[in-house]
Length: 94
Image (cartoon, rainbow, N blue to C red; front, side):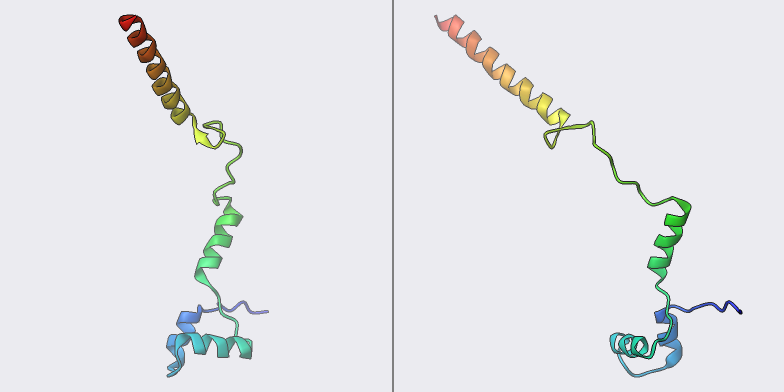
């Protein structure tokens, strides 16, 4: 069986010389059963075959309750500073 290259929809549309809009032309060709390839899908499949697709990130150790740990540390420092300032001020006045 001869393996002939399947052209993209855009290539076939340009070659057809039709006056239809691209969308109408694609719908008509799909109804006729014309085989067209989608370059983006083929690239994604190729990357998948090569193992280059980004892997799902497993549980991140950089977050705690959905916030970055640096946010928690900053918040703790601000609250700790406010408490220390309040204690300092109360001892100074008292």
